[in-house]
Image (cartoon, rainbow, N blue to C red):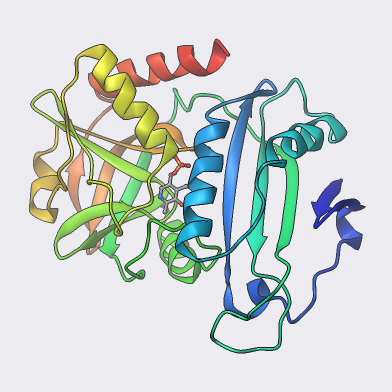
Length: 280
Ligand code: PMP
């Protein structure tokens, strides 16, 4: 398979980046994963807008105008124009002598590749999750390639047999290590408000829109750790996670929430999401 690096295509095994790249040395860069349903883009502009937001926040100047065309070219060249797939994009600050401060001028390193992925709707699936303190930094709104905390936290969940580690900060549930979370209580959907403590998930926003269409009130308020056991329904959202019902929640190895099946509102949202993504 092929990757696009800086300004040309390379066989994946032959693409090379400098050891002095700030992505390698500092994790100084951003990424996106953009989905394609049967080759059709889903919320591509929103993913690009989030990348531009991140670039502004980290003061990295990188031209994004050509990205859309390049992304389609990546699908084409990978022969993925008709199947479920995704494009991974990464921009780092590029190669420079190692200093903490941003160097005066660097030319950013840009990496992109398309890969097949199963976007099956997760309709028959359900997840168990665990809860843990959110020890990430205070700028989770930036989709940084520095994912040490996220990888540590998710690995702990996987080791214990769970799909995801969902995090809390000051007793308030924020999000998962690689997903957003919703709680349903008394027919209302609760999601952590946007801000520095969560990533502005694209799927989260889609689900908020679907709730509005379906007449399900959305409350932009964090759910506290103590409120989790009282939730009527819980589900995760994400680009590849889509809408995934949570049927078990563990905290300190104790099951604090259990549900025998996906909740009614969760299933309605899954159906609406399926219709939306398959009608592209
Ligand atoms: N939060 C985090 C920390 C994530 O890594 C992801 C996956 N990108 C999400 C939320 C979900 O975001 P999206 O719906 O844009 O994939």
